[in-house]
Length: 194
Image (cartoon, rainbow, N blue to C red; front, side):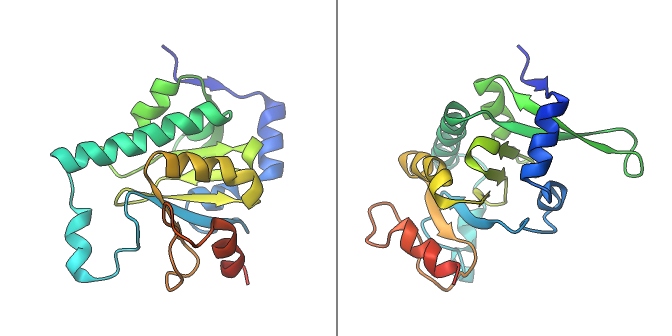
């Protein structure tokens, strides 16, 4: 089964117009002028050294629990909207060209998104209909870049429904998003943009 398909020139140009700093976001050199939120298995930022052991989860029941939450979320994102990704073609680095691809298989997206101790996280999704770019992070935490919180709300909802947490990425000193917490997503995002 084919996981990725080619993207038309028109779709490529439209995505590059919508996200002009796409490559900088991909290389983590910039946030592309977008807001961002971390989506994590953790309900708070792990700031204290005493919590760092939580990041070292490579197997066992806890790893299975985390994988289930993340895979459920990736599948829900695929079901929400068309998902695109990037690949480089050509000799690296001088002749490498960024090429857009569209995910055609839900199972393929989930499989490619799975935790693998032998490689660094590499998932990078472009969700143009929602104005979002979703980048894999480390330690069971990913970054969602977005242009409008209203447009990105379905991704936030899918995350919380999957048992994941939204953490304010801009200022780690402000309260976190929590499932069932009194602090609303809108309130926190408004605070972080001031």
